[in-house]
Structure formats: C-alpha cells, structure tokens
Length: 260
Ligand SMILES: C[S@@+](CC[C@H](N)C(=O)[O-])C[C@H]1O[C@@H](n2cnc3c(N)ncnc32)[C@H](O)[C@@H]1O
Image (cartoon, rainbow, N blue to C red; front, side):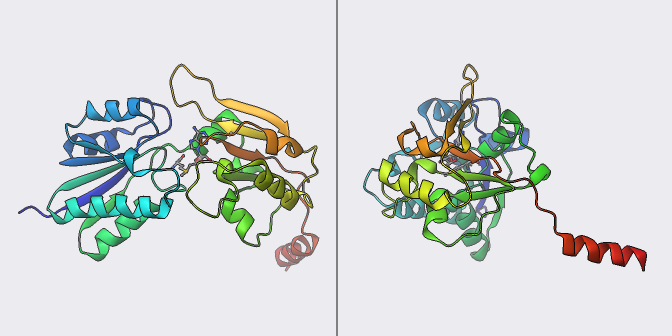
C-alpha cells in the first residue's frame, strides 16, 4: 500500500484568480480533496480539478463550538492519510493565516511519520495591503484576532497599524456564534479608547472574492463601529493615531557605537 501524505494549499480570496500553479497541480493529483472554502461556487470550481472533493461546509453549525468543527476536519483528513491516500486540504486564503486546523493536521501527520506540507496562498492580508496601499514596513502593522485581543492583556503600539481579524465575532466566548452584538463592540471601542478617540477613522475592509466585485473599504469613526454592518469577511483596519516616537536613548547609544 502506498504511504499516505498530505499537502495543505490555499485557494486564495478571489475565485479562480488566486490559486498558485503548484497548489493547482497538487489538487489535480490528489486522491481526495477536502475543501474549506467560503461558497458553493468555489467548491464547484475545485470539482473541475478533482473528482473527489469533500466539503467541510456541513461541519459548521450555529451553536456548535468551532473547536469541535476543527477537530472533525483534522480527523477526516488524517483518516484518509492513514488509509494511504494522497490528501489535499484546500483552505480559502492562505491556509496558515488565522486558521487552526491546517497547522494542527500537519503537526499530527508528521508526528505519525507521514509527509506533510503547507503551501502559501493569497490571504485577505495580501489583498488588504494591496487595496488599502498599506506597506507593513512603513510604520509597522499589528495583527490580532479580535476576540483574543479582548480576552488578554495586550500592549498596542498606536504609531503602527492595528488590524483586527474576525471582527464580527469580537468578544464571542462561546466560539459557537456567527456574529456578536453591539454590546461586545462597544466594549472593544472602550478597550481601544485610551489610544484611539471615538472620532478616529478606521476602515471596514472586505477583499473582493468574485472577479466582478470591488473590495469594500468603508471608512467610519471608531465610535460608530458597534452600529456598522459587519460580515464574516470583515476585517477592521485601525490606522496609526500617533506619529513614530523616536527612541532617543537608543539613537544616542548607536551613535556612540559608530563614533568609537
Ligand atoms: C478564519 S480567518 C481566515 C483567513 C484566511 N485564512 C486568509 O488567509 O485570508 C477569517 C477572517 O479572515 C478575514 N477575511 C476573510 N475573508 C476576507 C475578505 N474577503 N476580506 C477581508 N478579510 C477577510 C476576516 O477577518 C475573517 O473574519
């Protein structure tokens, strides 16, 4: 029997436009493809490349913990690897960006002695940097998952960009909802208030997922976030509230080094 192996690929964000040639060739060669994509059209597109595409979509249910869903995905993929199959897991965007199951299945498959690899894909982050013209190297850029940002003590740098992922789930402690309410977002605005005033301009960003769509880049005041229309695709971008602050002490020490 051939030894099982797994490759996790990203399908990108825009249907039919973002998948890398190497991801496509693995999809075509796989014995079985598991698909965690955002819509039926993308699933149909994957079916044109491989006759055995199995959707993870039915695993998501309102009121069911997403941890259980991710666990099931991992079990399903590993079972086929153990059965000697060449398995491809196709996850939307970049499979390693804000995604638990892809990293975990690779770790577990390797622990069991199987070959396992992740290939990079085009993430919502890549689209965001292009559409909004934000170079993370200019003043820096902080990425957080919105709920984790609320649950733990974090030190924000208000002179860098702040990007909050899964903003529509902000503050969800059940991990079983598809959105949260105004009250949770009010708390997020309050949490940000020492660094960012309510009139600070932020962007609700949604990259285009269909070739005929335009990205959503809606500027609003931070204080209006609780009433804003948010979807599962929304990412919140908070531009810097302060210019870069010089570290005079370090600069003086560096200068002293260069003079010695
Ligand atoms: C579980 S993460 C998956 C991200 C995905 N792996 C990627 O590489 O883009 C889901 C979050 O990604 C962001 N996201 C997904 N699709 C998006 C889109 N079309 N535009 C902007 N952000 C998006 C949102 O913050 C969403 O809540």
